[in-house]
Length: 264
Image (cartoon, rainbow, N blue to C red; front, side):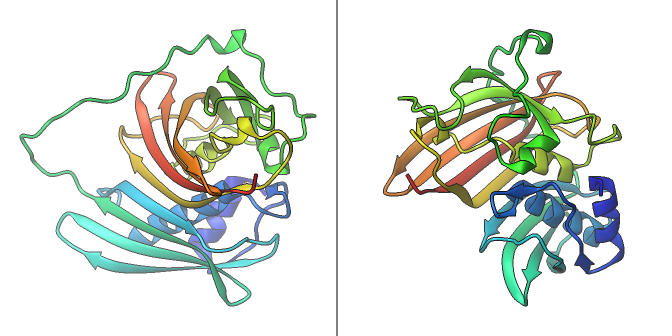
C-alpha cells in the first residue's frame, strides 16, 4: 500500500490498516505514525486557507503492526487559529497524541528573517547513498539517505550529530505533489543525534516531538532535502536535540525539537 492509499483511508474511515514495510524493530516507524496523525488533522480541518503552523507529538506507547483507529477533536476555532487534537488508538488504548495549530495569514508589520544558514552540502551525485543491505530498520528502505557530515549510527563516535540528504525512494514511492504529512514522515527517518556515539546496537526512541513549519511546501515527493541535527544535552538516559530541514533551493521547511529516550 502506498502512502497515497494510506491517506485515502484516513480521509474515508476511522479504522486504518497500516501498510507493510514500515516496521522499526518490532513496532511501527514513528515518522509514519506522526504523518498519519498530521494527515488526519488536515482532513478534519479541511480548510485550504489555514496553514499548519506547528504541532507536538507524544509517543505514548508502541504501535504494533495491526489496525489502528484515528480520532480528532477541534479544541478551539478562532478567527485566525484553529487548535486540534488527534489520537491514535490500538486495542482501545491511546498510543500517540498530536496537538496541532493551524492558522490563516493576517496583516502584520513585524517581519524577521534570522533563519540558520544552510550548511554546505555537496551535489547529490558526489555522495554515497546508504546501501539497502546495511542493518538499518525495515522502515528505512522506504527512503534514500546520504550522510554528508558525521558518523553512522552505532559507530562509537566521540561526537554526536550529523548532516545529510534524504528523499523517498522513487522505486517504492511514485512521484506526486508532496504533503506536509509526507515531510513529517521523511524528517523522522534520521536517527537521534546521539546514535553515532553508540558502540553497539541499543534502543533509542522519540518521546516527544515538536515541529514548526516555515516556508510553504512547493516540492514533489521524490525531491531531495537537506537535514542537520544538533544535540544540546544528553544524560541519565535522555537527550534533547533540534534539527532543521531544507529543500534543495535552501528554503527552510521545518524545525524539529525532540526529547529522546536512550538505552545505552
